Image: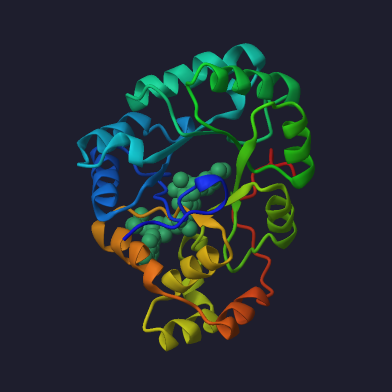
Length: 268
Ligand SMILES: NC(=O)c1ccc[n+]([C@@H]2O[C@H](COP(=O)([O-])OP(=O)(O)OC[C@H]3O[C@@H](n4cnc5c(N)ncnc54)[C@H](OP(=O)(O)O)[C@@H]3O)[C@@H](O)[C@H]2O)c1
């Protein structure tokens, strides 16, 4: 099964790896790639880039078929720190380049002109194929783009049926920026939503699969974190779930507004 893509060719389904480390992370990544996943999400902050890289190496999938995304943490975003920090990530991953490099948060030493300037150096040197941001408000995306010759291809943000990010999704659609949903199954909380249970029963699917199908059908890429083969496969099979217009409308109008990831340094 080919993975569909959202804006800028980002595969609509990827594997998240936060809090998955060591040999387990290697095995999760290898399992996912051999199942058909072509998008792997990591970050310097997760302290698993070496394990993720080992999983990419171990999988019987050509490197060039995989969208590998990592992120620089907020204390490595000063102009002089970005290039060495990105090279350290590449060393840990065992790769010559990554497909997507995100500014993890607009916080700490982030400064639009300096940080985006250094991301553009990485882009020009071919060490990153694409420049991206994470946890940026629409205004911050616009400012970052003003300071970046390279297009900003994606904004990775929390997005799931309980926190739908309508305004940000509209903005990104207008600007041709992919929205990549983190915590796309609300860390399991989607299972407790009766409306999702009803839709899941109708499709002989799970609430998790319905949530992932909703994101895909709304042109949002999702990177659910899954550790063992059963979850990795269940999420993969969400691609066989197609919601009808009533289901989509029901989910679109859920009114939960439950943001789960909200650190003190967040920009909102
Ligand atoms: N940019 C950012 O600031 C940021 C912030 C948070 C996350 N992220 C990225 O987004 C990824 C996903 O977010 P997240 O890890 O916070 O939350 P999530 O993907 O919404 O939820 C992960 C949890 O759901 C469980 N799970 C996965 N598949 C399942 C299934 N089919 N049925 C039941 N449970 C299932 C996982 O268990 P198992 O592990 O046991 O399978 C794990 O406990 C992260 O791993 C990371 O790569 C980025």
